[in-house]
Length: 194
Image (tube, rainbow, N blue to C red; front, side, top):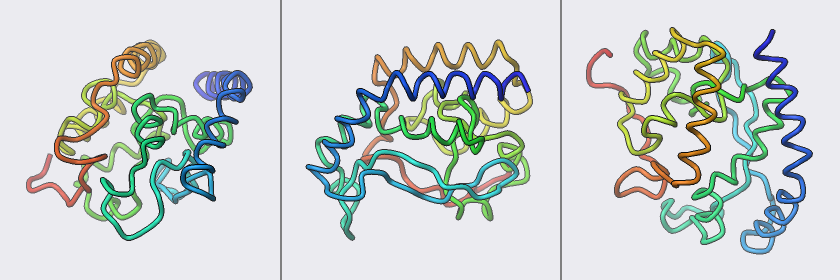
């Protein structure tokens, strides 16, 4: 209940405070990429229950690879994590929390190991333990180990620590891309049980 109260309070305040920035971001997306302004995708939430995730678009539509679809505006938004702002609405709705394992793709649900599935025992977050300990620069298995560790060790003080480290990571622009990829390579399953 305490975590949910904090999520509602902080996301409400941030949505109001960030609105003057979100409007020009939306206009920038509209001018450079056209409609729609928001990227919407079904992602697994608590216990794998599907929900609609919202982000500002960073890529043009089309069949090209991510490197070719990613625009200069989109790259800027990702560099400073500005594309994540609309997820505050997901937090306000209760689909997500400020802190928790990142919501990944629905298709991954069937290829997680039993241990990796533990990451869905809490609500997904805008930021999490894996994001402040490597983000896209670490392996999938490494991310999942960190996610599961968070689920087993979560606390109010840990969440505060993660939020503080997130601000530092965003300022330093660390771990945004996986090496040799515009974003990150798709997860294809673990070769061995983690």
